[in-house]
Length: 119
Image (cartoon, rainbow, N blue to C red):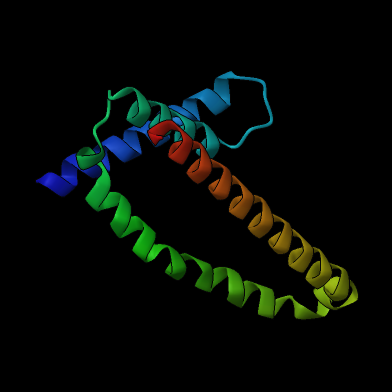
């Protein structure tokens, strides 16, 4: 019963994100609306972490399985992708490095800010 409540909260927020995507004229994916709604609910205390934590962890554990069909699809269209393979690999590597650097610097900034507040 606990999982049913948690999945209902998560899917309900996702559905509201879908509705916002239909109503608002911005080119933002509905999943992003849902994530921001969930973040706002968690930060404001409207949604407690315990209300979505177990199901959220389960969904995160299952996430790698969602990439299997995409990988098979890429292998099926390898001939079409062969012409742009090198640019895709370069862009993927560069963007991964940039994301890692930005994430690390942001984490360092947050840690230093929290240490300054404690002192």
